[in-house]
Length: 267
Length: 286
Image (cartoon, rainbow over all chains, first blue to last red; front, side, top):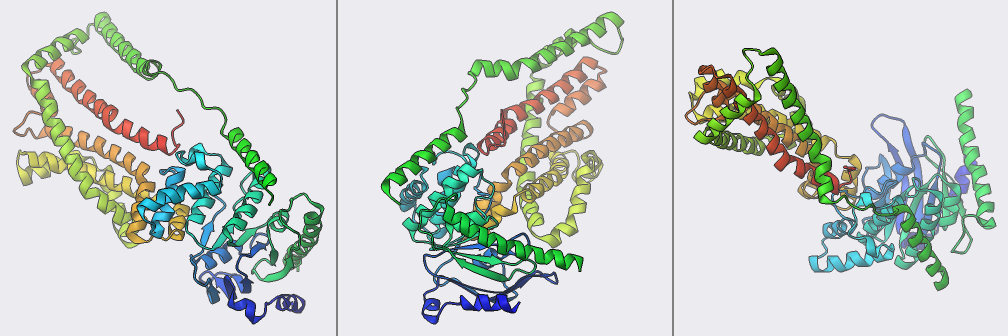
């Protein structure tokens, strides 16, 4: 435990960084009612424009962490700050509204944000252009493929005009080819928009492919176990040797975390 | 990213989209569609008529009129304008009763679906009322309102309201929680959330509740008309009059008229509406 603590402390940024952080999570602890501890004393600082991947096995509370940052849940202890922004959130399912067309789904987000009617149409077209679905605006969600739906969901998230984008395993349900293309897309769009991204996944290679930094969470309760800087220039390929090499290292750490639970179960 | 790479990605993505969507199937032409959905019920009807005729001509049951006897009775009643008048009056009472029921039941349903205490308190009662045959309200209604249109409306309301309330509740219950969470993330709360997310999402379940509500309205009205003949001639009363005259063909003509109106309302109003809503959401495969 002391080793892990010292690892974590080493990465706490200095005060200059803290002042300009896009997301500050401090001592965050969560339990539901009288249930078990889900998250234990999580502290994270995400710099503006940073792409932070949160990696962990089942039961590490990844989704709970994002819900707390999004303000959908209240922390048991600790604080979450997202200065100046209401973060937008993307789920594993696109969750597009089936009674609206793709364009209307994006437009609803603009409308709820208070964008005027005249401006909405133009902005919707621009956002569909960002995810390269200019021609698909009139289609309904069920007429789109899984990858296209997730891109509409991304356009809808971008429509909130938040500089902080929270993503909860958004590509987990897609096939490998589509996921690979969407990784490229997300890298491009994030550069274009200059957004800060907090991306939750259980896929080590995906985390290394996308992130500037990877935070490894332990499970039950979720604690920051380790973190890794990814110093590989973008655009990366998921199958490149650099990505593979770092993935091997992180996977070892992840497996060590999981093995600790085997000891717990037998002892 | 370099421009060349961006272009390659764009093509890659366009190719993926095209592959995933597949070719668009051509639509059936209108006459093929009419043949496809219209022919089987017509053939089934002709078959039933043939069986009926066969029974009458081989066994000569003294208390079953032949199709032709019913046909001439129908012609007779039609020429006197009694069927038209019955359909007009019954449809008027049924439709108005249904609309009033909808107006009363919808807010009750929304309240019961969203307020847990109300639901726990009233849901068993509503479900019980739904399984209660509304004909049991007829004697009470006659004691309260006499033989008037009020009696008819009361029985229709008691039949339709529980069914629409239950339909509204299950429509709202079936809304995926994720839709509401997305609405929350997008900044919708309270009435805005209800208007843009909750109510549109609940529409398919609500519509099937309305459809069932209409069926209950129509049934209840017929029961009331059969027992409590009010001032105006309805289809239920048509049957009762025929029975008093011991006219078996007349009774069957009344039953057929009630059946045809029921089918017509569904075919002209509810089915197209339901199909349209489901089709737009990709919940209908044909």
